[in-house]
Length: 350
Image (cartoon, rainbow, N blue to C red; front, side):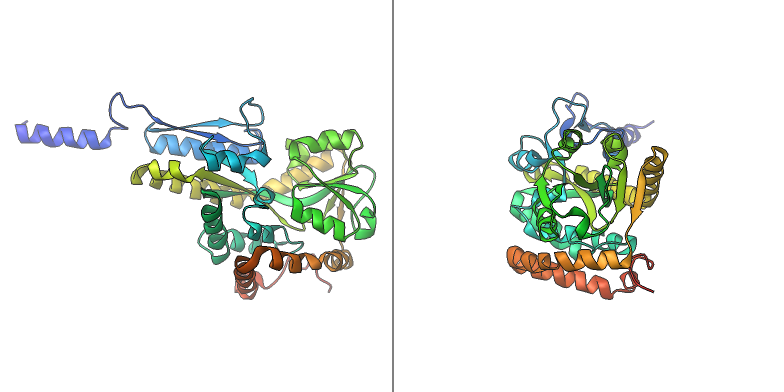
C-alpha cells in the first residue's frame, strides 16, 4: 500500500471510530417515576439503548426509575431539569400547570377521546404539538425530546363506579393536577391533587374514594390490589413528556443531537403504535384479577360534558393568547378528515 493509500485508510478508520480514543463519554442522567418494567420505562430504555448504540458509546444515559433512590419525584422534575440538576426528566402533563398553562388542553374532558384525534394532536410535526413544545422551551429552558402515550384516563374505585357526576357527589377523588381538580369540583366531587406514587396508599387508608389514572397503572401501580372497579371514561389524553436541559442540549455536537432526535422520534412512534394493544392488555389484566369494567353511555358522557363545560372558559382566560392559538389548532384538527368521525360511535347516540 502506498503512503497515500495508508493515509486514506487511516482517515476512513478515524471517521468510523466510535469516538476519540481515551475520550470520556458524554453522560446524561434521566429520571422517570415509573419502573423500567412498565411500558413507559421500557420505552425510555429503548431510547437509551439506541442513543448509546448509534453514538458508538460516545453518549451514555443512566436512568433513575422508581426503584432507584436517585429518582426525582414528578412534581420536582421540571425544576430539576430546568436548573440542570439532572439532564433529562420524564413528567406528566399536569406538572406544566404553572409554567405552560396551554398544556392543559390535553386534559380537557372528552376533547381527545379517540385514537385518531390523539395521534393527530400529538404528532411532532403538527401545529398543536409544535405550539406546545415551543412554549415549553421558551417558558422553562427545557427542550421536549418526545412524548410518551400513557393510556386511557379512567376512574379506579372500590365498591363504586363513576358513570355519571352523581356517582362522585361529595366523594374524594385523587387527580394528577389542578386542571382535572377543577373538573371534579365543577362536577360535585372533592378533588385531591396527589402524586401517582401515593394514590395506592391513599386508597388503602381511606384518604380518597376514587383515583383518576392511566389504565396501565392497574398493573404498574398495583391498583388492582386496592380497587375493584374501573370506570372506562377515557375522558382525556394521559401523556408524559420527556425533556432535556436546553444548555446541555446546546453543548452537544450536531451529530449527537441528530442521533438523539432520531431515537426520540422512534421511541415516541413505537410506543404510540403499541398504545392500543397496551391498553387492551391492561384491561385484560384487570378482568383477570376480578375487576369490573364499567362503560359510559352517551347520556353519561353528556352529563360529564355539561358539568365540566366551564373548564374551557377558564382555560381561555388562564392560557391567554397561546391558549387561543391552541384552541384554533384543535378546531382545525376536528375539521381534518382524520378526526371528524368521532370515537367509532362509542360516545355518540345512534
